[in-house]
Image 1 (tube, one colour):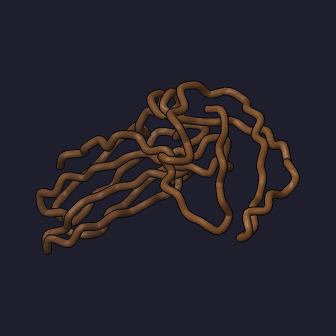
Image 2 (cartoon, one colour):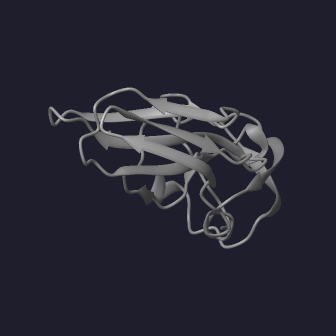
Length: 147
């Protein structure tokens, strides 16, 4: 990627601004701001790390230590999450057909689902924020916990 220009008063789709990132490495960025008349500010150089497909492909879903699932709910005990893990997202449907999406911080050792699950599948995925301050959240592919 040679150049990225972000206009402060406009919007652009992310894929139009950010090309495919194929490596994780420190990068230098020249940042400019533009006013509505198109006048450009002086250059500000910033350094940072660009994360992309290589990082995303290395992610592994958080492991389940044990799980007890019954018609009235579930209790899931987790292994420790990875360093960049921010949260775990669980999705299931209760007996009334209501879809529930629960997001627990990655520091949570146990998740308790208190709704009547009936025979619902529970899917989960782990959310990662590299370095703790990245602007993007990366997601693992969902895994399924079948009661």
